[in-house]
Length: 219
Image 1 (cartoon, one colour):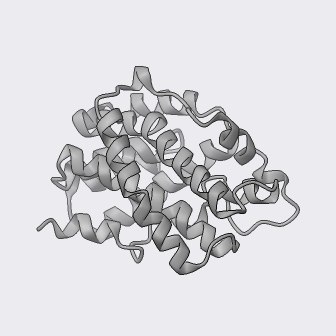
Image 2: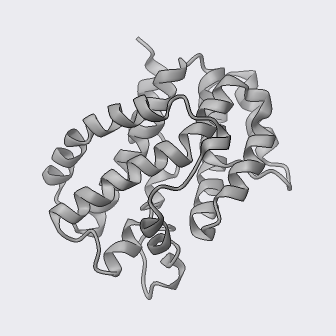
């Protein structure tokens, strides 16, 4: 049993992901994702977008952890939405700092130290792939874990925003298990050159987050 994988998947693991709603808060303010069917559609779009836009960088960093700086630069250029870009960098640094404190692995410590450099971008996707490689995580379980955390994060945000109840959210998460399988099967072979945003409307709504009158999340 890979206990470290379960530990990272646990909501108690302080990665900073719960400070972000993946654009859902802004979408709800705009009147979207406020009904069960609309929320279901938003969650599905979010997971597929994570598969196409982020998973190629998770996979590439897992395959070649020494290429993290170059992958950082590429995903930074791709994330033109300033809110999503900032969230990715914030979560990446938090994830690396937490893993350094928790896991006594020299390679993880090296990645976290690099993230503290003034010019380091430290986006979440390449950081996640490199850390899971250092911890001995298999490639496919690394991709699955990243997608699972993406799904759990937006579902949890739905509860705290008030567009879903706790049990409804859990049913939604269970329902999208098949979505996770489909996204992994479709996107596990994609490389950074094939990365793309496939939910542009959700991306545009998320970009308005900084202009909300009041907000609970950072993104």
